[in-house]
Image (cartoon, rainbow, N blue to C red; front, side, top):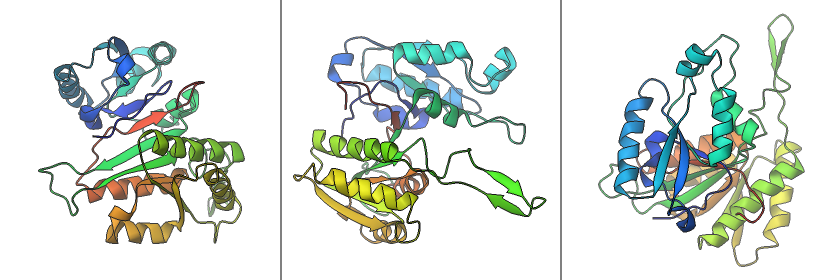
Length: 284
């Protein structure tokens, strides 16, 4: 199984945490924040923690409030003390959380990503024996930029009496540089041989074009890793027809969300861990 280095802060969906891997030096003693979640979250989390205990990862759990339970208890979906606990422990394990619809609440996931600058969303797709799936021997990773692109709430508005919706796609050189470099460093540290940058620069020439330009620049710094670029619609087709040609895919926020779910379908579901990371000095 592929192992993933832990950065300053990440959280993973509890349902995908049965294959969580922690850096060797952290296995001795590591406290993590645990958010049980809403709905089926507590049931999933209880099972997940049993698995982690059986793996003897050396983890201790600090349970914190978030979601509907936190809203009822504290009047907010994610209390400051919960944010402080995540910052303190550096790792959070999160079950499914409910964001009330149509009541002016923003997504808890988006809040966490923004607050902790969790810019790298790392989503492996790995075949497991006994799982019903269309393909065998899939072992690939999607690295999705997590903080900008089409998912920003900034710049969204309705005009013309509700007849026209406007949404701004914002991609920066800084955001592109750090996600592409993260993907290359991840590939390098895990013995991966190929990076595919997925884009739509042929049509979205500004934002997607900037991402592609940056990917080409950074690829030159890693001559030992094969670099490929692919338009997103072709990438979807190629993933379905011949997924084994892919190793690490790096892309922008919206495309990464879609492609990683497509990859999950190739192996029979979301198997993990799916992690969201930020970098600190000296880490990957």
